[in-house]
Image 1: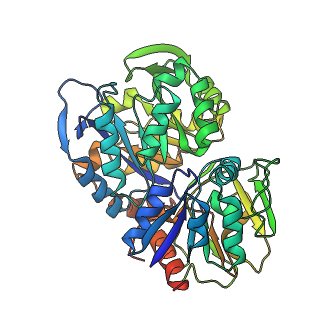
Image 2: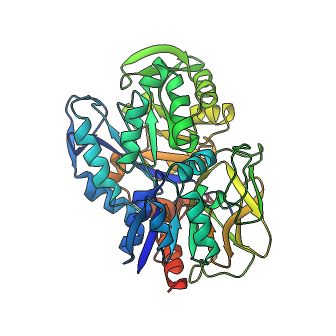
Image 3: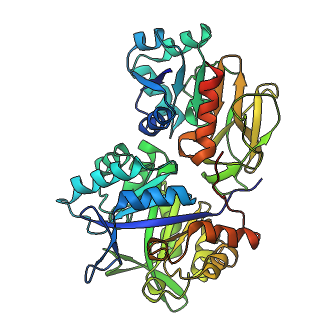
Length: 256
Length: 201
C-alpha cells in the first residue's frame, strides 16, 4: 500500500483554447480544453492542471467558463491558476469546479494571500507555484510568467510558503522548460528535502526516462508536463506502464 | 433514485452531485431543515477544515436535522470532512462539537510523513462492508487531508496507511463514510458511489 506518484498533464489556456508554450510570442493552438480533459481523464491522468497564461482581468470570465467546461469532463482532481490575486479570485476558481488553486506572483508580493486562502479553503487546496532558475549553487524565484527576477532564494521561499499555508509546491524550472532537457532533479530533490508538503516537478519533460529520474533521483511526488501529452507523442497509459515496470508506484486506470 | 446532498457550502458539492447524476441518481440539495426531514438517503460532502464543516452545518440550520435523519435510520454517506464530522470532535478544531454519531477520534496524521496526505493511495480491507463490493484489492482512491479518524474495528471496513493506519472506509448501521474523494477517484470512486446507491435501494 503506497501513495502513488502522480502524472499531471497541464493545459495552458488562452481565450478558451489550449496553447503551447508559456511565452506569448508564437502561441500555437493545441486544441479544445474540454476534449483534452476528456482524453486525459480516460487515459489515467491523476490530476489535471489548467493555467490561464495571460491572467488578465478582462479574460477572467472566459477562464472561469473554461474551468467549468473542463471540470464537467473529469473524475479526477482539477487544479487551476493564473491571475489569482486575492481571496475572491480563489473562491471563484473553486466555485467554477476546481479542487485546488495555484498562486505564484501574487504570493511573492503578499505572502499572507497563502494564509488567507488556506484558512478559508484548507491547505490541501492551496498550491504554491514557483518559476525558478539556477543561479550558481542555488536557485532564484522569478515572477510574472518567469519574466521578472526577484532574487529570492527558492528553498527559503518554499519554507516560507509552506509556513504560510501552502499544501503543495508546483516547481517549474524555467531553464529546463525552454530546453526540454529533462526535469531539474537536483532542484526538486533540494525542495523536497526542505519542505514537508508534496512537490510537483515541472519543466523539461521529454522522455519516459525523464519521469523515472524525477521520481527517483528527484524525489518528486508528482510530475507535470504539457506538450508531450497534447501532441500524443507519448500516452499517459504508456508512461505509467513504463514507470510500473521500473518499480515506481503508479495508479493504472482500468474499468472497475 | 433520489439522493439528498447536504448543502452547507462544501466546495466539492458540484462534483459529488455530478458523479451521482452520472450514475443515474436524482439529486436534490438540502439547504433547509425540511429537506433533510424528507430525505430518503443522504450524501454529506466535505472538504477543508473540520470547523468549516461544523460551522457551515449550523449556519444552514442542518446540524440537528442531519443528526435526526441518522437517528431515524436514513442511510448517510460522509465524504472526507463529511466522514470526520460524524465523530464528536477533531484535533483540528478542539472547540467544535461534531455530530457524535460514531465513536472514535479524529487526529492529525503523524509528522513522520508528508502532509497534507495528497494523492492516490490504496486501502486494506479489515472488515465486512458493501462500499468496496466488486473492487479489486489494489484499487487507488484520491485522498486530500491532514487529519484522519480511527474508530472501532467492527465499523472500519478498510484502512489506509500514511504514517499510521487510519479509517478509509467506515460502515455502521445506516452510516457509511469514506476519507477519500470518490467523486475524484476515477472508475474506482464511481464504483464506491454506485455501491452506496445499490446498498440503499
